[in-house]
Length: 131
Image (cartoon, rainbow, N blue to C red; front, side, top):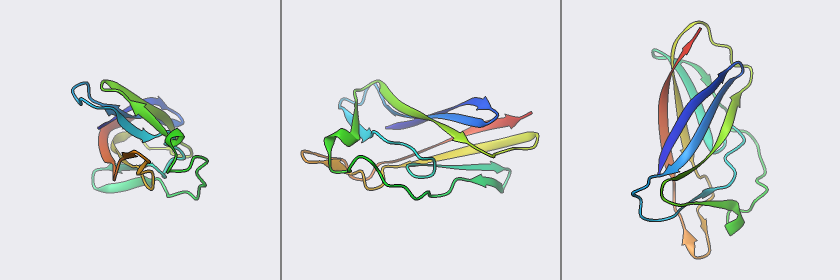
């Protein structure tokens, strides 16, 4: 599994984040259907140099789909991905160069009967220039 990220909008800062099953994977990959809210499955940290200027917080949320149910997952065939738009409300960055680090975890979504997933983790860092 690979994580991919693209900045889609500067105000509000919006990132398209996706999980990708490489074409040469050879097997279907199951990932949680829900990747929101921000800070739950996908955490974001923005840095300028060594200084952290933004960190998403772990929200309180009640998942609508139970982690032990097949309906809670998307099956990604090799060469396919699944993603969401992450809108970082209230983030205003002064002009400069930044790095945006995104970290994915499947939390308690470890599979369903007949399809055990275990822990899934992934991360990606993308450069960003604020005008």
